[in-house]
Length: 200
Image 1 (cartoon, rainbow, N blue to C red):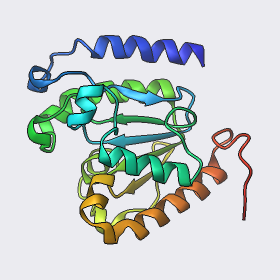
Image 2: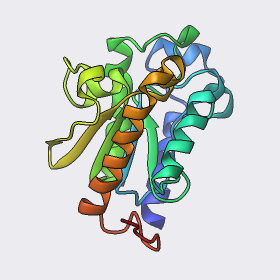
Image 3: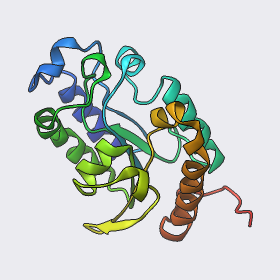
Image 4: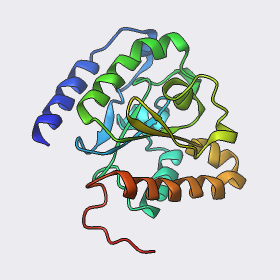
């Protein structure tokens, strides 16, 4: 744990001074990532929004509050048993989608985070993250909740919590994805749910 923690802290320090793309010019904070360095489950979003940029932590705005509620429902906690990061670490202007070139430059940081954490399961939050990590032509509305194995890692795309705020009618399907994720974790992870009783 301590070794991984130090590696991530050093990576974050390096990332905080990154100026490889134009997104650095508008940022208040680099939004590196948060969570347990020993996490078996890693959540990946597309990029920080306004609140994330101000606080320096991923998913802390309204979408983050919804995400935390969904995580709590399946006994996950960003400070205890998962790790959360984004494709790009700086906020795109007006919360626009990160451009392919920006993703290309910034994803090296995510790869280094992945190399330290070594999760068994990756959950892609939204279309952009899923298209970058799982497959470019993903149809998130149709394929959310499906599981594929890539490079020895189980991957699941889910609807972005911001999209759920815009389309509340999608929440039941999204919650079912999280219940399926809980089952996937119990079947494939060794310590994510340590000390948490299982109820059938």
